Structure formats: C-alpha cells, structure tokens
Image (cartoon, rainbow, N blue to C red):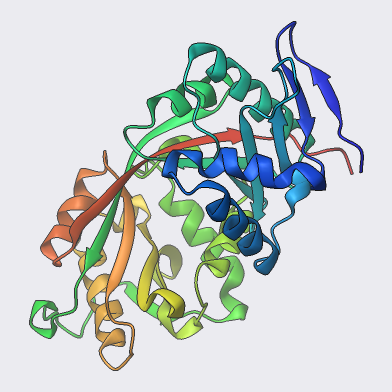
Length: 316
C-alpha cells in the first residue's frame, strides 16, 4: 500500500509507514530505551508474532530528506479499543509533529471507539503531544500487587446480610452482569471520565479478553434480587499471576462491607491455584478502594498516567 500523505501545516507531513521503512520507524519507537536497531528488529518480530497490524503505524517525514521523525502505532484490542505507542519528542516542534501523527492515526483506524495510552509519570513531553491531539487526561493509575500469604486472607462470616446474595458467573447471566456493571458506574470514583465513552458490552468484552477468562473466578452480587456489583478475576499464565480485573458496587451496596466480603471470596478461590499473586490497577483518587486494597495486603508497584480519546466510528 503506498503511503498516505497529509500536510497538517507548512512544516509537518504525516504518512502511513510503508513496509520498507518500518524498521526505521521502529527504531524511533524504541529510541528512548536505547535499544537501537536490534531492539527495533525484536519489536517488529514481536508485532508479527502477536498479530499486530503495522498498517496502523504512522510517522512524520518533515525533515528535508524525508527522514522519519515522530511515530505512533495504534494496536487494536478487545472492546473496540486501541492502545497508542509513540516516539519521544525532544522539542516543542517535535511535540506538535507527534500530535499531528496521533491525530492522523486516530482518524484512520477502523473498528475502534476509544484510543488509550499509559505513560510513565516523567514522560511529560509525550503527554503534551497527546493533550494537543485531543486526548483526555484521566490522572494517575496505581498498579498494586498482593504477594500471597494465607495468613493475610481475612476471615469473613459465611452468611450475607438480608437481601444480599452472590452467584458465580455464567453466560446466562450476561445481561445481569452488564446491569451490575452499569449500576456500579453511578458516582464511581474509579476513572469517572470514562463513563459513557464505550458501551458496557464493549467494556465487558475488554474484561473477558484480559488474561485467561475463567467463569468460576467471576461473581455477580445482588441486592434484593437486582444486580448490584461484581468481582472479576482473570489468571495471567504467562505472567504467573491473577489480575483483579474489576471490583465494583452499586450505590445501594456501598458502605456495608460487601466489597471486603467479595474480595475475601476471590482470595479464597485462589488458594488451590498456581497463580495466587494478585495484581490490580486503581485510580489514585479512589481513596476507599485504595484503603480496601491496603487492608488486604496490596502494595504499590508502579504508577502510570492514563489518557484516552473517543473516536467516532465510520457509519455502518
């Protein structure tokens, strides 16, 4: 496919990177890590192994000799999302050019309604380009890990308060789980800016695709028979841990210790499994959730800055 060119202004030309220039573009993507040409080759090989569509690789060729400058790769995922990876701009002009590349990449990608990026806290120049390209900052995500220790599993009563019940997930409960997720988004403190950017069915598709889905590690909570919360755990065999994909409650279920009870059930279910270390991500602003995870022995391992941009899909 020949490169598609766009003159965003008198100084920036954006193109879809053709196959014969992908190594050069990959070198720009990995330049900040110091990986060099060998690292770029490994990156391209990993892309082929994992089925990443390199037609979504874009760059600017604004230099007089057409050398590739700033670069962006969008990788589509489940739930009609795409993760963005970019080069690191060094100057203000480079930031403008990276923003132009991001704009073109987001405008051309198909089947995606939300582009996402996770940046290191120190990557301020990249963040500036994302913001210029109309990405919305969600603030900081804290990544937590709970090294396994049976003694850390709180002991809870087997009975639930009157009107409260839980049940393991099954395909017949899909609509109820969607209703529970939607109820849990009301007045949520976990990335509230995301509400309404995707359908809940898209969100569920992303949850299903995280790690290895096992319905015996998903639970639906009801209050007076109505869906009112969920705990979703997925094992990640390559990383040898289990991810807490989602834990959320509707307003009617909050403040009653039910999140603690759900998490205890999840931990108990992991006792006989090989991947018992539990990881999760939480909005740094979500004080109640952070307190819950701390009480259960989670510790912070890293931090990322999250940005998103809604993308309007092409008409059907």
